[in-house]
Length: 300
Image 1 (cartoon, rainbow, N blue to C red):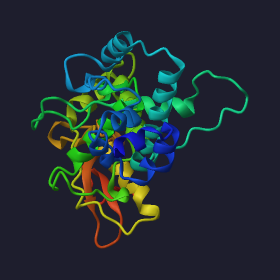
Image 2: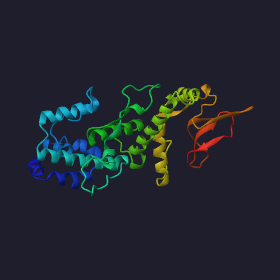
Image 3: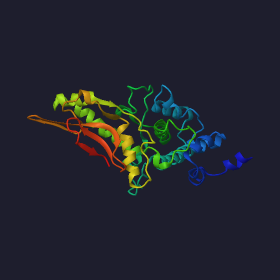
Image 4: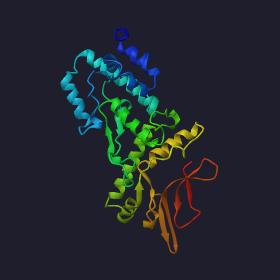
């Protein structure tokens, strides 16, 4: 009987006035209560609509298969899917630091960068070992649905907090910030391309590229603060070090990521380092001159 009463509610009421007051992870349990609950969360009753990221099929292949199977073309089904998309975009804003898309006041229905941001995510490597980076720039992709994007961010978040109980609640200030990770991926991609560019600084580029160490998920216990202005800096550190975690100093001469120089008998090479805290102040050493002990650069 409760399910029948629930079915009478418009989905817009369920998604905007009920589910948004629950934690996003609770929606995953809520959807199992009944068929109508599943539809409220995902906009479809097809339980295979989102298996792309956990199978050999791509997300796009699975979405196309779902559309062909269910004929997702009726106005009602489109409305249900739209409500579900709005719900998971809300989750991306609340959980992983995405920004609300600006209202499209000019009547243009084309995708804009504000709405498009929700669909960019990063796949986690399938095989993880000491040689595997925590994340790779080549694994940035565009998800077919906001839910698929949210799932991948949640996986990254849980990997960073892997020492915690999987059921434990992760405070908002300690979660990953998706846009920071996307910016870090773009930054490292440009560095990779520069190092691979044979037309400029060939030897330096190769030296930098060969010295970079695989990215690591920073220990969340190492990076804690009382909130406020430091939260952004901590989130940025997590993002940057997920792709590369420093440079091997043994193989460096002048190829420090932060610069190097040689003049007569003077050498300088500022390598990228795993973060280290200086004294009790909230300052983090991210580089050090391998030839001069006094050369340090502070991230914060």
